[in-house]
Length: 455
Image 1 (cartoon, rainbow, N blue to C red):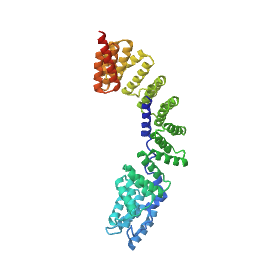
Image 2 (image 1 turned 90 degrees about the horizontal axis):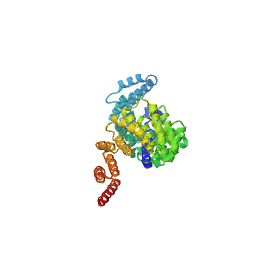
Image 3 (image 1 turned 60 degrees about the horizontal axis):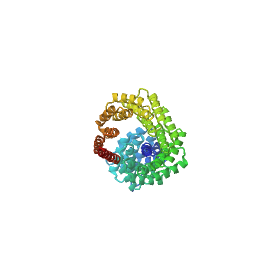
Image 4 (image 1 turned 30 degrees about the horizontal axis):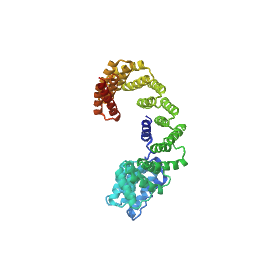
């Protein structure tokens, strides 16, 4: 049984944390002085990768710069009136940059496109158009123009990091990793670059490298909850559950562990056979004001019951009912009652279990689990006819046919009706081939043969 929960816990921790710190470009990226200076430039131009400007256009640009210092909109209107089809691409570039300053991204992109049409090897226009397209989430276009800028000689770290972001968003992990690594060489310490690289490695399943990078980052920022969460994920992915639990417990003591993560901590403690700690985490999760879905709490109760912690499981179910009150669906009430009945049966309270199961069946006539369990309880009390009826009802439900046939066969063996039992097991094997059932069928056939010989 433990292996079942082991797998559940690892898949949970991967799905919930399996996210490294967000790789979305942050305000630190867009507002970094290095990036701003690189993007805005000084309106000067390099002849080999940027267009020439005439003396009159140089005068226009000086006027634009002077006007923009006092009134950006006035400068934009002034420049719009000066641009003509045969004017330098430099003017379109300047206009695109001012549109960007005014947060008019679509117009900014149009201006940069016009600049590139006039001067195809315009490095800064390609770069800025790529960055504007990142803001507009036109990532394919952004990728092309950022790569073109780099091919023309751009060597600014922020450009590589933006390119890495585009590739990662488009699931191009190798290209993204290469871009992020180059970006970090040119822009050391960039959180956007580091977070992006962690995501690349994580999505590629290279968890040891993720862990090494996170440990390095945590040396200088040991209280970073996102890094600690990512560390727990990497450890879980590597099957290092004890270390994952220690990391999550650190987050818990920091007050940074969310309710869902607290449940995962309980699952990990459960796998490590630390049942008291596991129950403590589960109970704290239920007591949190920020609730999870009821089905997740029911799953916790099921975990407790399946490890034979019947008292704790039953108490947890009662707490669930108290916490959620009437805010439970019909199906959720059914699941809770089925688990309660399982506990009652396991602890010898068969009459209470039977009453609860009959209530379930009255409301859910096709609930095969309840029908099979009712049959088992009736068999135990000696009411074989009622038990057989319940097994037969359950066998008419596709999902439960196999299990119902096997339970019915077991009862018939108890009654020494070996041939009828064998017939039911043969039907069960048609539905699902199982070694244990084959062995059971062989044993019954031998019993039937021995019985005939005695006659």
